[in-house]
Length: 480
Image (cartoon, rainbow, N blue to C red):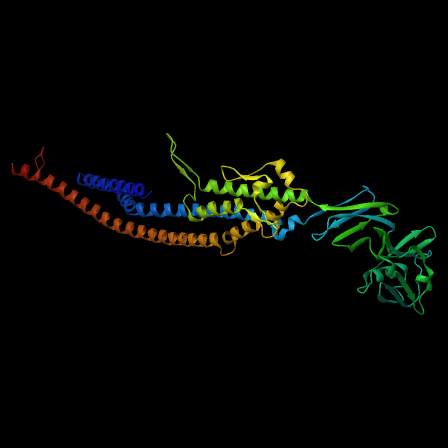
């Protein structure tokens, strides 16, 4: 690179000097100098070399900076693919399956669930209390005074006043009250008039609605005067013969870290709920890791590749070929991936044991049959490699110094950006130098041009006076 730039600069300088000499010769033979062209050539001869060097440095720095960004992005994506294995979370997933499909029983296991099965028989669902009044005439008013409404240990107090005591006013007041305990009021227009309907927002026997009409308020608004459309009731079921009640149809904490959900179709049906490790989710997470690792390897290989020159094609080198960061990563990450990990059973396990191996290019490949067998519940190899403290944990620790804030790649990028700032300053200084040289050469060659013009005029005068090679001058003619 340096040799090429030097040669180019020398050629430019020689060309400029040749142009200058030719211009002076031309000027000496009755022609004026092309000052602009001459100055441009000479300034270029002075500036071209340093300018080319700075441009080359800038291009190289930008290329390296972009390559580091690509590498960091690939590492970050790989680290994201390791996230499901943090603290062994990817191996702590379970599925819940009811023996009768579409029968209203489902469950969501947590990471601390225990594999097993149990019978569930639902006798009744939890219900939300609902009350409905008799029919009222449209526009009917309900007096003046207080209306107290309570549910689930909470209550609110409403004031019914003249001018805002129609049924629509009462419903609006209940629904917009800030201290509403969880009751929704609505109006059903029936054949016999308007009916006030109150519905509890929560299920359970403890969430019954109670309405008390104070003095001066129509007692037909009291809950004692309303019809019970739906009672406030708890869910009742038996799990492995043990009677369980719940205010909600979503039961949490009844079975260790398993949330059971009931729907109407489950009533009166005895079902078996089976909790098992979610091998499909584990497989997806591991395959996601393999894909991300291979994408990282592709990125690194592309950035460190070298293609030798062949015929008319010049050699091509990756932006990070020979770079210390790339070399370290190329050695350290495969070492972590291929290393054995001692499991809880005291045996050292490796990826090859579960059907995952490194190929010649450094990428991971999966033997589906071996991998599928290794995914069976209770696999000590899967637990050792992808559990807490396993291979994935080690890989995550190896990546972190490179991708973290103020990490290895960021520090290197910061240094390159500083170099680019310095190059920009040097380029600005070079521009100033070019301006100064242009002004200097313009003054010098303009003066020379003027001098040569005077010399040329003098030459013409002397020729006219004394004669030239082929003619006699004025003095000679007069002398005759």
